[in-house]
Length: 197
Image (tube, rainbow, N blue to C red; front, side, top):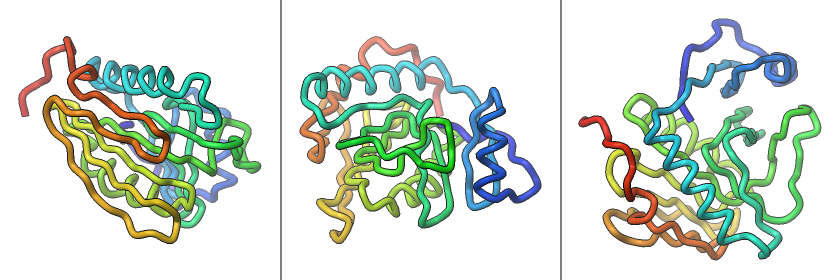
């Protein structure tokens, strides 16, 4: 997702929850700092939709994993942060954060962000590093909005070190923890023209 304007006052998680539940706008929570989220470009939104649809089709009928859209928040309690990933996959029973009424997962398995020029460093650093603190996360995927490219950080268990694998061009990106793959050629086919960098 995308970072927008932020509020000046630092909030507790409980104060943030009250704000978020009453707000028509989604926000990220970064250890007391609240960032309003902005909308994505047509290209960004189509990539997110295609990733969500691809994973949904591959996982259909193969419980226990289920994909969730950008309307589902993910909480990283160890670093006191909460975000709305573009796509979240939860395996096993969905563990709802009991402190919030909005759908907030404590146990994601795969998290996907589609990058944009404006938010790439935020997604790549702030969000990715927070995601990697969640014990259940096995893969974090960053997808380029402009060119067919994806980067995957993965681990087999919470005790294992993270590995990094980049993919580019007409290739398939394996998501081993859920037995799925993203076909970059299919994801990028017939997308609206990207703005040059």
